[in-house]
Image (cartoon, rainbow, N blue to C red; front, side, top):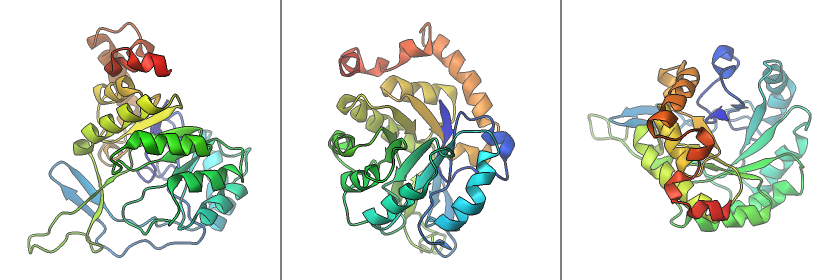
Length: 283
């Protein structure tokens, strides 16, 4: 399944791009409206992009009343990215999502450019699990040294799947040697993030048999195939969508060719190939 990374596509302004995906992931929804961080809040780097948008969104009430019905009308399954500043924030939003309109909830547990909830990822997942029967995917940070430990914790708390990776915290400087982003540091995405994503997905697959959405620096079909070889069941496109709206169709076509080039008969045969057979025991 091919998705977008949350915040990297506006399906209402580019419905033709969203139609090329198997599911659309919304921008993160918070309980109250948020204007986001002050600009500048996007900066290009040599090998990627920094952003400090700050979860700008119209808030939960406006999303449920206006945005969600419009997204549903597009005919693409909707995954709702949920954020907050406490476990109660996350749980209340989950409790209000209509189960007939939402295919999955992705809990944004690791945004690097806003203050995070004091509770652990597992505590937030557990609070949300009590409030909804919708599928819950935990979107995790690559910053944790032992990704597997975090994955096992959120699985025990009730997560149905894992999304890896969120952006890394990074900093870039303007010509006058001041931070290019008004906030200072921001979330780093783009091609340079791909080895980090591969390592995180690889470690997560060692720790769980839950489905994994792999993301981070995917530009080509070969990039997607490598995530699948590390254990991703699904792949999300992020920064590439800013420069190539045709990426979903192109990556699909390239993925088929990449499987053949790697000398596998089918994509399923390439799943977990990087584990040299060990992951087959886990799965």
